[in-house]
Image (tube, rainbow, N blue to C red; front, side, top):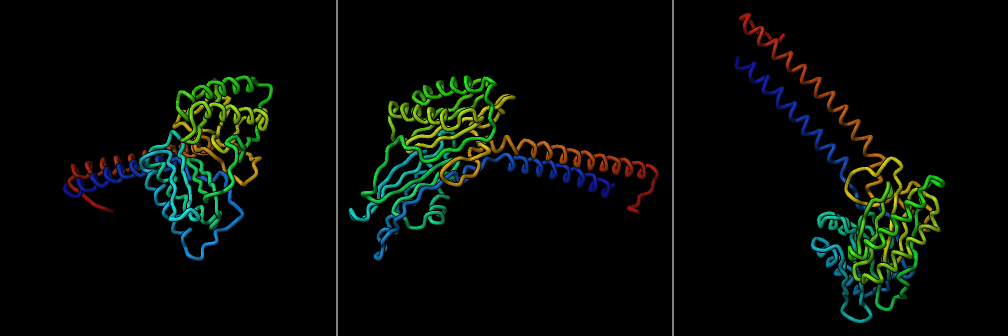
Amino acid sequence: MGLSLKLSSLCIIIILSMALFSDLKLADSASPDYTNLIYKGCARQQFSDPSGLYSQALSAMYGSLVTQSTKTKFYKTTTGTTSQTTITGLFQCRGDLSNNDCYSCVSRRPVLSGKLCGKTIAARVQLSGCYLLYEIAGFAQISGMEMLFKTCGKNNVAGTGFEERRDTAFGVMQNGVVSGHGFYATTYESVYVLGQCEGDVGDSDCSGCIKNALEKAQVECGSSSSGQIYLHKCFIGYKYYPNGVPRGPSSPSSSSGSSGSSSSSEIKNKIKRNETGTTGKTVAIIVGGTAGLGFLIICLLFVKNLMKKKYDGTFSLL
């Protein structure tokens, strides 16, 4: 009787453990990755730093940015002991990220910047969930409307009414980014759109920047089902879902092709999860559920056999 109870309890524990493990695996497969590299921009000139002052200022700047990323989605700071070693840096996280996700994204940037750009006098690295840039005092400035990177999907959906839906969605987003004070994401008739401006850009200038980016998307990407346009002070992303936008955390789409000036991985985690994650989760659910059900049946048959032998007055593990 005691051994029977222990074995029955063991079956139950194993089943629960399998269910918990399956849930954890599913949660892990559904977790977004906000640290995919989109593009990098590195100045050609390297630091001349025999005294190490530039390196100290850069390290101090990184430390300040990483610390602030636990509290806010945009932060700008200046470090350096002299005017010759002054470095200005900032980070911007996507508006729909939590503080923890923002920190996770920004905290990877210092190491990544060193690998991608080395000790250049200015650098900008854009990840799927955040970007960070720095530049030394006196570095040449560019227009906030200058396009830094673009990527357009390979699928062409001309003649399906897509352009009209996209343009209407663009109009809604342009207005929304003003009322949202720099960030807005929405869906309109199967078109998902997202736009964001740099944190220190005013509402009026933000609207102008987003409008410029949307116009570039119409020209550069044409009838492509997805695209992203990155200007110096803002970016936009869109994706058309013929069968309806999948439910999930908001984020722009990832195009399957790239026409940018730099190498790019697929961007914006919603699309990546929608294109690959749904199948994986379905398979995991089927496999995990089948295995769990089979094991449950075995345990029940085993317990039934034990109870039958108990009433027969015999017991054996053989």
